[in-house]
Amino acid sequence: MVDKPKNPKEFGELLEFLFVSILFFGGFCVLYISKVTLTSLTILQAKFLEIFALGVLENSIFEVIMNTFSGIFIALLGFTIFCLGLSFLAVKKPGKMKYFLVAPIICSGILFNFSTMFLFLAIGLFLASLYVIPLGETYQQELKKWKKFRIGSNAVSHALLVMFIFIFIGSLVSFYTDDSYSQNYMTATAESLSNIVGGEISNFAPGGDSKLSESMINKTVEDQMQKIRDEYPDLTEEQYSQIEVELRDNIIEKANSFEASDMGFNITETVFNEIENSPLVKSLLIWFPIMMSITIWVSLEFFKNLLFAPVAGIFSYILFSISEIKLSKKQEIETLKKSSQ
Image 1: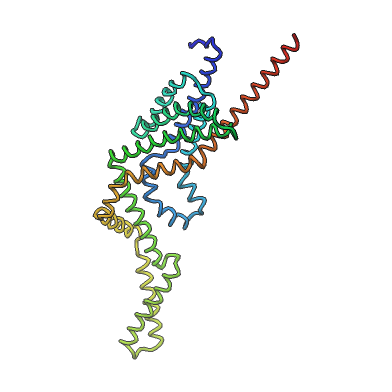
Image 2: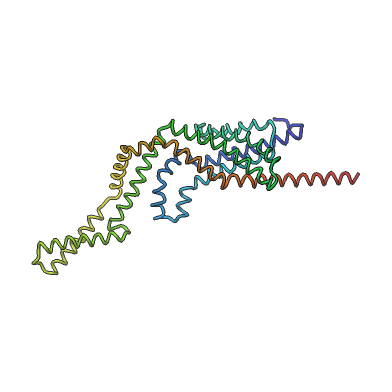
């Protein structure tokens, strides 16, 4: 059993260390629950056009966004929890206990099997934790206006830059060392394009919802009937009408026998072969690791300004306000003690 530290300052630092450790471990748990991986991000990138082109045909825009980005929203919550921990460090500025923050970060690696991406994320978070403490001290001395908010916001914003650089490097290394990501990208792109093309082809079928299909049937029947009238001019109007009905039924029957799934398979195979042999796509795959890594980095920077930094500033404002309340109560108690003496 660990003895309680005799020094109140050391005990306070231990509590602060436990609080930040819980936040960091909780952030990793939320990331694990989100199931957002480099593979899922790669597939999302490849199927982005299909999702927003065909998804809204069956669901509302809100449903499409929630179904597509629900995991990413959860992952953003995980990063927000990291920002709360970094903001706490910027305000409280713990001593040597800060170096032991590597413990909860390493323990979190069990969730992710210590993958390459996790190792870089872990290193980035740990270095950001060390960097945010002197940043908090500097901003506390320099800032004059909106001090309680801007200490957390500015310090965490700069610390996240370090963390995001390591995420960029980690994703780049992962994409370059594992060919499965580029293969998944090609497969998902081929499936996405074939689904879009297949959806357009199905619109021409009489069973589809497109008004164009009916007009195409009428046009086909008219052309065929004109040929029949030219070839057999001696038939009666009743005979022409009977032939037209049979001709229309025959066209509709053949169109309804169209198997979209079979056609979709053929389209997918054709598109995949074209993509695999395309010089443009081959060049794209060469740049794929860099493009995906930059996309991840830019997205994180966007949410840093939109979400992470403001939340960190609000949390530091709350922490400073609580500290001021405690300090004022402590001064009141000391004043009462002196007056009672």
